[in-house]
Structures are given as structure tokens and as C-alpha cells.
Image (cartoon, rainbow, N blue to C red; front, side, top):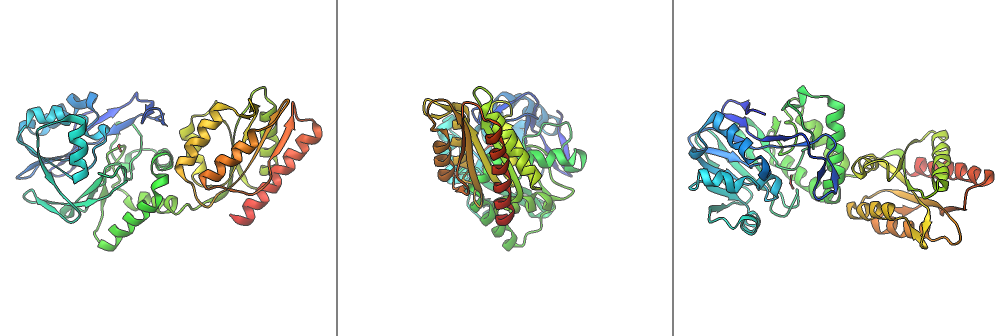
Length: 398
Ligand code: FEO
């Protein structure tokens, strides 16, 4: 995609990765692809804010060339060291070897360990400013949003915030702005992004938003490093982040299970029926049929989790185990859960599920329900009641 003018003298010069389907070493399913956003500021000093993933270096360089010869770049701001934003740095530095690279001290350390470049590096910290001419950049360290090295760059003259990973989405599109794309899809991808990447960092997200609010700086545009640019309503994504970071929930239950011969699935469907008949919204997922990223997105605003597995080798099945291991790392708060599953000769899965849920910080609100071999009519009725009683607890606690 060609360079796009964001404002007079500021251009998007990034790359759209239409085909990527797995991100972060298969921890994230990018069903809509992604973008790597780099921004070029043309002032007395020519400045590039972030780069793109290495395989897209030439696309970024061609986009820069549409605006200015890359050799003229004076500064490259590295808001974040991770390779999806720094991967093209060695290539662009070949064209402007005298450019100064700017970032936090941890960014300097990370970039050196990634690329071993002999580059002129200027370390900055919160409040430091860099005058480009008509515009001045202000830096704000944002550790753990997404890595310890991360920072935001702010341009007061335009009330433009460049927060790198924060407020992004994995959303490939030919459009660049929030008012040009389908709003529900955009929020869906934003929720997936928050749930699967930033959820465990919620306390830091809240603190950083409060810090920015206390600074009283106006923000008219938020231009993240993935996905679209928020210019129509930047507070929409800020408010959504506040809600997600506070672990605000709805009376909603997500059922996730893995089944061996279909018995656990029968139980899952009856439990779901009981939940629905209690008037609580329910989503049901076979962990082998829906990507984990989507399931986590549904869990982001749900009060209750019901997890099921058949027993295999006295324990739970391996894909639901992997799912729960991932959930444990996300550290959801203010959630309740319970478990179910079938077994043949000896059980074991539900105990393990409860162990995972507790480690994830989920309160066990109801004793597990199990069925031997295949659930009979009475047991299916009990599953239905199990869903109803859990839904009642969700309504009470939600
Ligand atoms: Fe988009 Fe933390 O990198």
C-alpha cells in the first residue's frame, strides 16, 4: 500500500500484512491479517517513527521514497524494540547511516542484542523533548505496554499520540482511519488484541491512562503501530481500554471444552441450554474448532467460565490443557468458574481444570459435574440444572 497523508507533513509509510495468520509464535491467530505502521514526519528534521517487520522493509522504504529520499532521514524513533516494529531498522540504517536512533535505555539494549548495529543512539526518558522544527516530539516511557522498553511519542502541535502497540489491532485493510472501516469489526479486533496481549498488564494500562489524563494533554488522533488510526473518536478506544483494564464484566458465560467421543460435548450443550434458559448470554466453544484468540476475546467481558474435558490418562485432554495454560498467563480478575467432563474407568480431568482455574485467579463457584461413559437422560437433566445454577450465581455476582 502507498504512503498515506495523516496530517500536513505527517505520513503513514508502513506495510499491510494481508496474509499473516499466526503472530507471536502461534500464540495469536490474526484472522484478519495485520499492519505494521511506521510514520514519517517531514519538518526541518526528517523523522521516522518506528519501522516495520523485516520482510516488509522494502515496502516501507518505497513508501518513504514517495515522500522524501530515505537518505535524508535525521531521526528514527524506536518506540518499541520488538521485531514487528524494528525489523526494518538495519535496512533503513543502510540508507541513512548517520541518522540518530532514539528510544529508551532498554530499547537501546534490546536493539543492540537483536541487530548489533553500530548506530548513534540517543536515550530518552519521560518528559524529554526533541525539536524537529515546527513540531516537537515529547516522549513518555510506557514500560510493559508492551515490553519493558516501550514508550509513547506525543506531538503537541497536532495533539497526536503515537503509542506503538497500545490501542492497536491486528486488522489488515486498505483504509487507514477508524471512520473508513466497519466499526464492529474494528472493536472486535481491538478486543481480541487487548484480551490476548494486554490483559495481564491491565494494572499498568490503567496507570498509564491515568498518568496521561493527569498530564492534561489534548489527544485528537491516536496512531498506533498496528491497524487503523483513531481520528474520528480516539476516546472510544481509550474508554474501551479502561473498561477492559478494570476487568468490567457482563452477565455472560463462556463454555470451553474438549471432547474425546462426544460425551463431554453432550454435557456442554445441555449446560449451555440451562444457562440460556436462565436468561444469561452464553457462548460455547469446542477448543479444537475455534481459534484460541477468538475464545479469549469472548472471555474478556464474561463473568463466568465453564470448562470441560474428557478424562485421558487420568487427566484433561491436551488441547484444553494448553488453552488453560494460556488463560492462566492472562490472569483474569473478578471471574467465577466451574468444570465438567466425562470419563470411562477413572476420572481426573475436572480436578485438573479446577487447579488451572484457581491458578488463573478464577474463583470456583460450583462443584464439578461428571458423567461416566456417556451421560444418560438423568445426567443430562443434571447438566441442564448445573448450567442454570451457575447462571444464577453469575447473575447474583455479576
Ligand atoms: Fe507489535 Fe510488541 O510488538
